Image 1: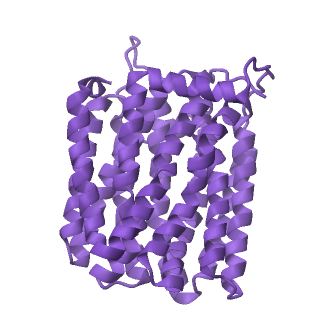
Image 2: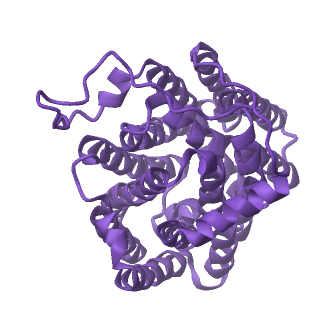
Amino acid sequence: MTATAPPQPSASSSAAEPGGRPSRSFNPFRALQKHRNFRIFWTGQTLSLIGTWMQSVAQGWLALELTDDPFMVGLVAAAATIPVLLLSLWAGVFVDRHDKHRIVLVAQALLLVQAVLLWWFVWTGRIDIGTLVALAFFGGTMNAVEIPARQALLIELVGREDLQEAIALNSSGFNLARIIGPSIAAVVIAQLGLAWCFGLNALSYLAVLISLLRITLPRRPRVAHAVTPLEGLRQGIAYMRGTREVSVLMRMIGVLSILGISYLTLLPVFARDLLGLGASGYGTLLTFVGVGALAGALSLAAVGRFVARGRLLSISAYAFAVMLILLSLVRGPALAAAVLLFAGFTMIMTNALTNGLLQSIVPDEFRGRVMAAYTFVFVGLSPLGSLIGGAVARVAGVEWVIGGGGALMLAYVAWAFGRYPEIRRL
């Protein structure tokens, strides 16, 4: 078990102007230049995420090919996230008590195994919907532990001062991969077949494993924990319930997860049934989401230290809901791509700002549990949105899922910021 000590600031850069005032640099890549460990981690993680996005495109399309059923597409997505719902809160206690770096390393190695198995089953023609659901569930089990550990690890890589920038840059890497991965996937599907999206994803895990092995962190002294894991879980829940800002932000991200993210799950159905596109067209739409999200993440990395983040969160949350309503109304591929560009921008701003605000509030001893709760809410509750969305899409059409979710989210955001105006001042 390891104790979490505050990371030491890098000596390689200055964070202040002469006279002690904070630097006004708007360079979005400042944290990468300043922190060696974060630079190594970000590079390997981004390369690996390109493969992950290739797998995501292939997995959604494969589910549609195997079943021709929007509900089953939602079920596969739900299978990947239900373990997060079941396990992530306990994983947070585990993360707070153990070496976060080692947890991430082991989990990434097991995710490599999952990608190899997907490649083999598809390549040999032995894949069926049950196997696809089972492997998605296995990957979700690994993510239930890996995601909170990776989120909690960031402060050890960059320190508290640069944490918001690191979170935004982490999102930028995710969305750079969202741009590149689906584009490569479209070519690979057309030229080599779905199986090789899974195979290339397996190879991409080598990048993140190598980067994790190159990171050097100070040894943490082993400490004995006076309370049981169950009591540790209770303490974490009590802290989150008793801290009003944390409670409000968690509810905000829950609404985003259930009502907002299902548009990505059902995008293959939207692309095929409403826009008349094939697999490559679907990949192109995902690319536009990624371009917008990358722009949003880099914008936040550049200005996040100098703006009122609570006010910016309210603007981005409103705008994201409006983009979903607009998306439900369009029927042309070009206009849909434009709306998805802005949806990606506002979605990532909302997500990264909520994450950054939570991490700026929480004390280090609760960081793993709060990040696990964030994972539980943002990732773990999304199966509910996926399953409800798939069921409604089967009966009423995918456009009602996307537009209805946007309208409900717009109403909630208006209520939440009216009821808790202090969130704007964070």
